[in-house]
Image 1 (spheres, rainbow, N blue to C red):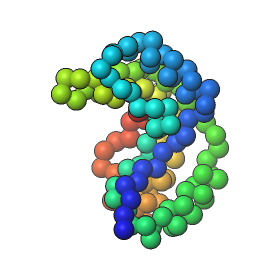
Image 2 (image 1 turned 135 degrees about the horizontal axis):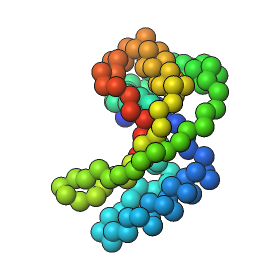
Image 3 (image 1 turned 30 degrees about the vertical axis):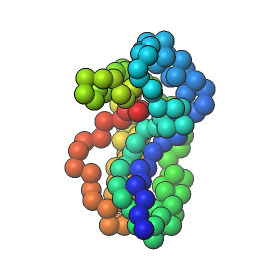
Length: 129
């Protein structure tokens, strides 16, 4: 069996409050249902459909990696909307470049490669969706 997996960063609750408040003030579309606060995240690695057998090694790897990187302060610098069929669907926030976040993403990507996942081909652009 498989599960569709992402490796993401959690966002502090007070930051989520501000994001939701700002988003709702800026984008008041009656026909748009935005994602709930529990789904807002910063993706570090998309794993895709992943065999359940790989979950324990992934958890172990992430535990080790998370201990190597201290909590970081991230700053958002821009925002926008991704559209689908000319309708606004996904609110996004761009982040200021952060070398430690880039190192974390690259480290996770490399460790995932060792577990059999493909290396990320695209350059990492940190954003919240």
